[in-house]
Amino acid sequence: MNILKWLLRLLPVAYMAAIWTMSSLPANHFVELPDSQIDRTIKESLHLIEFGILYVLLVLAFLTGRREFTPALNLVCAVIAGLYGITDELHQSFYPYRSASWFDLVKDFIGVGVAFYFIRGALFKGKFKRLGSALNLIRKI
Image (cartoon, rainbow, N blue to C red; front, side):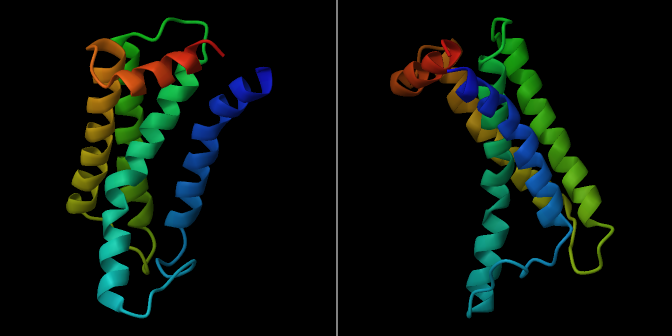
C-alpha cells in the first residue's frame, strides 16, 4: 500500500509536468486528425477535462495524507488546479504556434468546477454514494 500511496502523491506533479511539456509543443505534435475541424473541436474540448483531471489527482494525493481532508482542503485543491490553468495559458502565450485565450481559461475552470461539484457532493454532502465509497477507500491507504 505504501507504493500506491506514493504513486497517488506523485501523480499530480507528473501530470503537471506533462501539461507543461505539451503546452510547449505545437498542437499537432502528438495527433492530427484528417478532418481539421474535428481535430480542433476535440482538442478544444480537452480543456474541459484537462484541469478537472488535475484537480481529481490533487484530491487523491491529499486523501492519502495524514491530515483530515476537509472542505477547505478540497477548495485548496480546486484553487491550485485553477491557478495552474492560468499558468498554462500564460505559458502557451509565449509560443507562436500555441494560443492562449480567456475562453480556454473559462473551459479550464468549468472542468475544475464540475469535478469539484461531484467530489464535494460525494465527500461532504452525502451524494454520489459510489464515488464517495471509492474516495473513502483512498483515505484508508
